[in-house]
Length: 211
Image 1: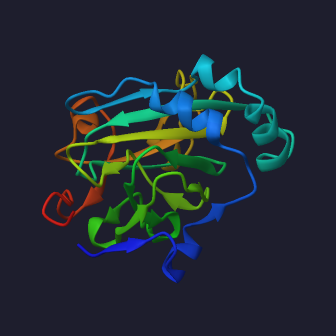
Image 2: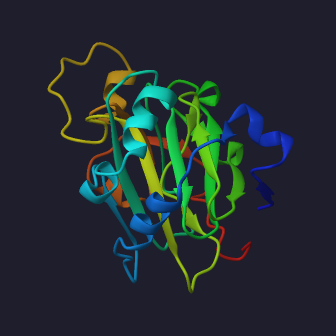
Image 3: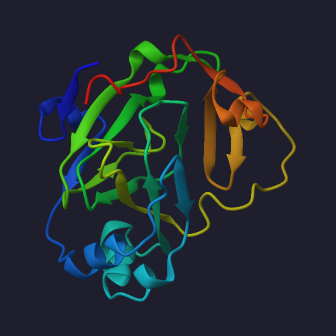
């Protein structure tokens, strides 16, 4: 798979580069978070991030006054496995270069998206990006297996926490996996084994040979 740059024009329909913020203290805090030797780990709300003044700026400026949470996703990964989406944009920032596998929510047909719709983008270390709510995404991939990735995840407060109890009214309701998190899993993923709805057809993309 070709890995494009986040600076390429192709990225514009999936997200944007966010500028104007002093990220030095946040980058230091992110670098201090644990890095799993295998697989990935996710924390929705990280106290050391949320004690920083930048949290208030993100809430007021990036999210227009909405309450937000600052968490992280760290580890090693090269596979697609799943796609997720939220009702709001997600902000990402890495201490090292990392890669996002993305697609468009509009490409879902009857609850299924073919993995061939996936596009890969490399985000340089220290570059903050907004991933639009209309963009399908999931766990980052590392650009260097020796370094792995440490990636900031900013979302509306409560996202990715306990799934609300709902009465399913339509197909989308069957995709709800956690609070403000709709998930489409590949049949070979751990999430599918745990009961997530299979919503990705085709191969489970692996970029290990492309990085």
